[in-house]
Length: 308
Image (cartoon, rainbow, N blue to C red; front, side):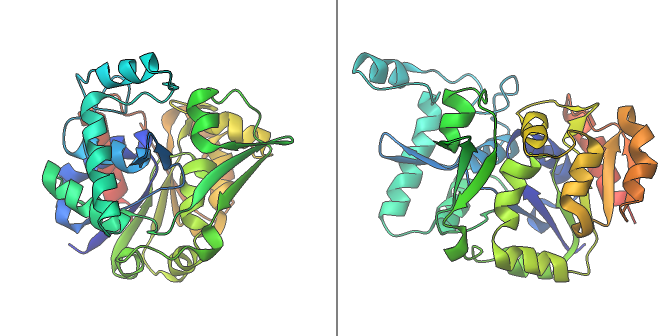
């Protein structure tokens, strides 16, 4: 089996990937992770999407929340609050260890991709997790006249603001991390995970060399709708798409990706959209895309890998 590439955001991507590593050899899987929502907090470099994937593949993610580490405690955060610091970004004690080590490695001269590879090795993750770039790219949310840091919009303000624009600060200077372009060029299948198209996948596609390599790839590119029955299972993709002028539906996601996709997977509840989506020029597969457990994740992964 050749290389399988997955473009990934956070929770939705992680759920698919936990099934995918049961279906394909993990060493053949290259996950290109979004770093647009990285943040520096308390002097630590935090990569939320990379961490969700890493913790999920290491078998230690908090399944209920979809992020963080199962059974984690928040003693450090409570003390930070007592010392007068803001504690809206929920960092568990074990989770903090990851950020401390990542920040230490970065300060010692490692790149983000090198630090990520080392953390994955420490946690026993066999798949190849690569940040989209070693250069800082930061997703900023425009809400009318207000410009918000991504985590301020997403966590602190609970996605309540209407999104009127999205800026990927630094993307013009960003180069793909080492291994990203090669993985795409050598891939036999490329998967766009069921992640937020605008906030999780668009930052990856905004890196010119990544987009160009994908457009030139002869491998089939398979997208999976994160919107089921007009709503997202987690996160604000439906709200963001609507406020940005896109139809908040499986069709809207397919139209957003457009010619990039050869295949698209939608949930059974959206089967009536099949013909409409196929008129966009892609083949549509209808199946259960709601991943409530590992069995669901494996089922969807098998569907993804069986499409020809």
